[in-house]
Image 1 (cartoon, rainbow, N blue to C red):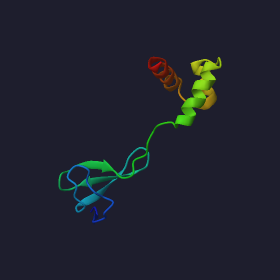
Image 2: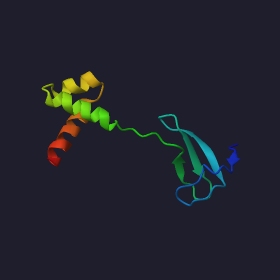
Image 3: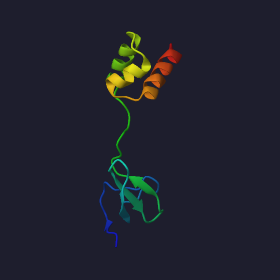
Length: 95
């Protein structure tokens, strides 16, 4: 049986209640999932962001504009080539 908790950190983002929040396993990245038994809303506690830092983006752009291809930049920095090419497209659109 699932254990009910009354922790203040577990507040349903949909209805705002702290009571009747139960554990519902883990998601792919390993963070705790919870379910509100009142409104049946599923949410993640302390979700992880999946984005690169601004510093990493700047380094990739410098590498690309110094003459390395988009694919080569991705390989050198351990980033997908599609991600690098999307950054390049975004910066050229802003200019």
